[in-house]
Image (cartoon, rainbow, N blue to C red):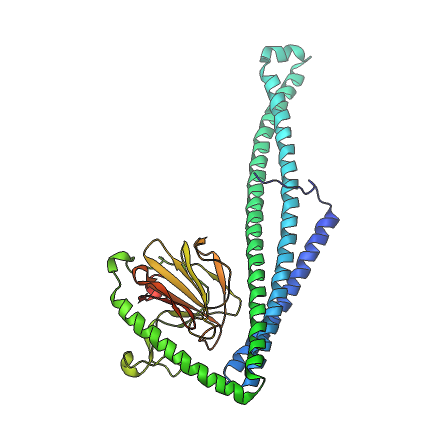
Length: 402
């Protein structure tokens, strides 16, 4: 049973003011969304440019400004949702009073009808001086009985409206909680982006030559790490027990983020392929052990299925960057990589579609997106390397389950 502390009735002026505030917030939301779209376009432009220190700093600064605008947008959405909840609370309280009023009206009518029902037609005739008065009284009783039906219909309609408002109220409360979670994640992402910019300036001493030297060294280490992961998982794929995992069927897993697919699973042949192994595709491309889903920095990432958080790690500028793994009861383990922030801990139980982190560009990544891998749990483990904890397992094409 919901409890509402708001007053039963709200003045027309207060309702108008509330709606005016909501409309103002909606206008602010539209303007902020427009600014975010402009920042997104700027980031897409800088992504296609060469990798110089100045361009990288510009990109980070633009990303920071975009995140700050996203935070303002989320705060505005929170304000709008709170105002909407306030209005719904008042509507529900008013609706409850009106429902009680109609119930009282029905009770009075039923009592009157009952009193007339206790008297016989002969008694009614004796109480009236003539037949005209008698027939008027009979008609009055008939009208009362019609009023009973009208009141019942009105009460039924009021109850339906009240239930709809209560449902809307609960949905708005749930949306408000999600927005607060997004705000927390965006704040973490913003802090991480500022740290990344500062780390870049500190490491390179703001010198282009130092930046290029660091970049070259980093790329060599990345290629080595990627190859080690590939070779390890090639063996683990052979160890997958088909009886321990679900059969290929759509809907086994939910999409962790609702955005376009940007890279598929398996051997890839593209000029943009980062991995090039002789063992894969005759050396023409690289092996991709999951799928990539396009996403903006700070977008919520959700659990593909209920399970237990089995790993949370940060590989820095290598491989998956910030990552999360979830062990599911059906023999599958899912990996979420390149996150900007994580919002869960190891051992935590999560439900399907629960927010677990936020999309990013950490690790070995050329742009903000989510890397999503599905492993057979019987092959999966987390191994400690010099650059951090690495999730390893026999990968399965996620698209057979999504």
